[in-house]
Length: 208
Image (cartoon, rainbow, N blue to C red):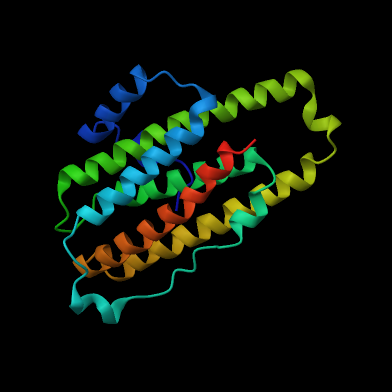
């Protein structure tokens, strides 16, 4: 599964165009990043809960364990940059899942578009803030001076790899089930769980 948003191949999709317009008028203050991430993640949690009235009983026998990597939070907690990178990776992968043309669900389409827009905005915000941090570090040569760049980078790479594997399992499940209604309902519950987990990251970003 690609680590780049499939947006670049499907940017003519109306939801993406709306996302681009909204993103363009936002004033992106990286000091408020934690607030934005918390807000968008909470909105997506609410939308995922609203897309379907209840979990279909007939889908229970198809449920599976996708193994959301719980250790990511403990790995990235000391360094805010790596929390942002984990959030960025999660946003890319979730955006790609919800932007598939093979979507065969009875979900409310307006809710789905809002989730896509929120994730795309989130990606733009994170990308800008990570780039700003990188420039600041280059100017101050902080990465060489603090002596922790190599080990920290390794932790970040491992965490992102674990996230990609997690979303690959989700993607493979959808393919195996031929993107059935039950498959999408199971994924809805799983990604809602993932979003809830990532709410903790936004809280950590707020801490001094």
